[in-house]
Length: 80
Image 1: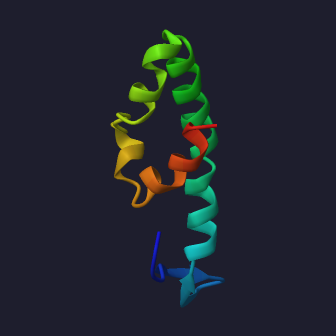
Image 2: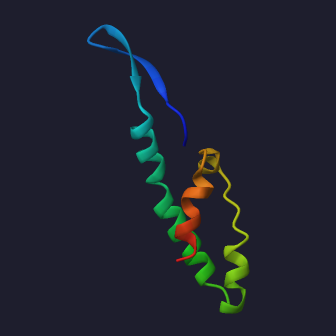
């Protein structure tokens, strides 16, 4: 995720703008471990001769795939 994410919220009845980039980044990155583990588990269940090819052809789909940078975040974890 790049850039700054700001939201307008009310705190104690007073509207204000809050920067939530770090919180949002941490929440999104919490998804990378389960996704990476699922990829490793799935790829590991195949014949070792095909595992390298499978790791290089992973397609992230579904709601989580819409998170900007999720592919980059799981890349180093899926090969270990």
